[in-house]
Length: 443
Ligand code: 5AD
Ligand code: SF4
Image 1 (tube, protein in one colour):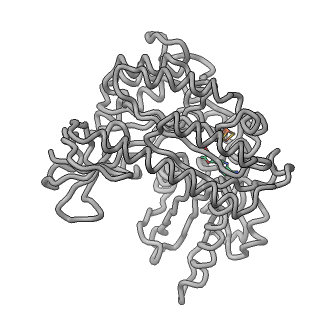
Image 2 (tube, protein in one colour):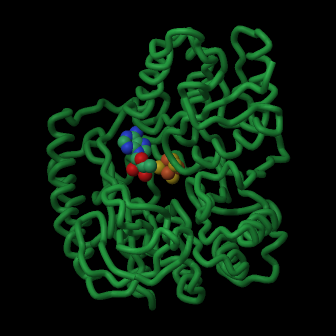
Image 3 (cartoon, helix red, strand yellow):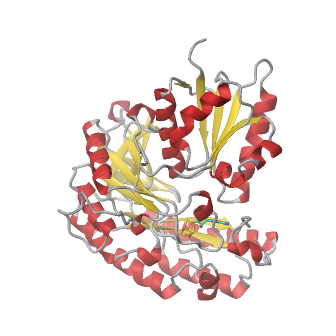
């Protein structure tokens, strides 16, 4: 029998993308082939997200689709990621065609697990913890991009915001050894990557057990030391996400000011503009704390693009409290905002609160907030016209075959007319037009 081929489908955040790359690395080492095609693969693995109900539902729809989609031979289907971790055995009941359940802590054991399933074991499950010596090795061929690499620096979350499932699906915070992170970035640089994104649920909570690798770098927190260390590798562009308000130290902004290659973009979710709601969410910050944090960002030497997340319709949120959120958004002038309708997650503390805001009200609030943000964003994007921005060229634009597309250092999408030979390069682009979600320019 030839090598079996495995197709991995990824849902959700960058951490899942990084985990899929990690899984592919392990599987290829274990003798499997990695395939881009769901139609011909022998095995399909769904790397799942459970942040909101809709995300979770996607998985079960997809399992159904796969089951009904093929006539002849059915692929072996496995579920990995957050839904696997949370639902465990129950997945076999809800979706009897699933043969393999791999939790977020079991990615490194994936090859052995799949072998068992291929060998005939009817139901294989591993939702145990990661082994102490976590292996973050990812081979470059498995990376989602040839130019941009995701580098996890911290996994899990200890914050327990009351609405959020992440502390349960991803476990407690575990920071990677700084030395390994710096080495990985050096290697990526040698291999020609032009951008790394340091990722984690809360990057500024980065706190390794020992500071080996950071001794030579100054900074008020381990994270800002790490930023300086990574900047010193000479990697042309370094981004990081997601930041947590309470742990966002102004020294981060100082590091950005000092190092041109630390990109001028900060994603700092606020979640609500009302102190009572923030308290019930157990965010650990008030509105004024947040405004103080973003002050340091707004006063930076370089223009830093600030983006955020907001949940509307949290249990008990009154119309007046929602108005407070509108006011905060008005004042913060985010360059981008992800708005979510509250979604009850089983097992989280907020699930015990009665979900008082109706679906209609959630939708109304969503639309009102979106409308406000769009008007602000339009102005902000317009303000870039005439400016020269630094762009990593990522590929052909989806809209027109004559245009290329990429992201600015401030993480905005920009399209521009240029030769495809520039793909992978960093170029200067002059902004000539602006929409609400993208810029247009010329090299
Ligand atoms: N309902 C709605 N949105 C949520 N988020 C996290 N949990 C929930 C939930 N239960 C949002 C938060 C977070 C983003 C990744 O997802 O805004 O910052
Ligand atoms: Fe979830 Fe809060 Fe942790 Fe972010 S900080 S992952 S919202 S618990």
